[in-house]
Image (tube, one colour):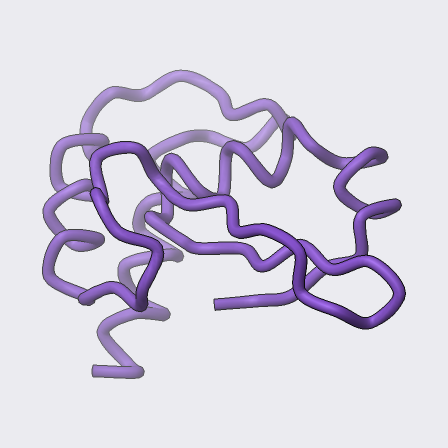
Length: 90
C-alpha cells in the first residue's frame, strides 16, 4: 500500500487507476499529511491489505494478451516483470 498527496492524484489519476486495477494495489490519498481516502480495486471488496495470490491470478489472466501498455511497453513484458517482482517478495 502506498500513500500519495492529493495533488499527485490530480496529476496522475489515470496511472494510479491502472496500478489499482492491474496490480490490485491500494493507494491512500492524503491532504496536508492526513489520510483522507483510499483507492482500491472494486473486486477487492475491502480497503484493507491484500494478498499476493489474487495479484498473481490477475497477472495470469493478463499474460498472453499481447499489445502495448499506455506507456508504450509490451503488455507481456510488463506482466513478466511484475510477476518476477512479486515472486521475489513472497
